[in-house]
Image (cartoon, rainbow, N blue to C red):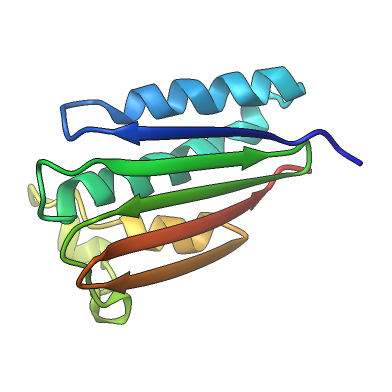
Length: 138
């Protein structure tokens, strides 16, 4: 059976705090001997999920909880906020032509997560949002 490592972290809403989680993710990957190129997309997924939770939950005083569970073959990224929730199906698909030449560079998070992950589950209600992303590493 493959070794599994897990990191649980609770992040307050402060600027650039997602970097703490990414450092932890990188250390897990290094511990398991996973190369930087294989963990690169996983770091993008984690960044998008964490930043979305921090920006859109609507509560400054509550943390965002993250759990990374990793083996040499697979990473599970779990991100939970305790905010107002949202309807994932109501988020408009970004259109690159509309974004070019404007200051609206944000809005790609869900599309990136759906495109770059091997599986995504989103559960959201008035008590918060839980996103589970799976990224195959082998």
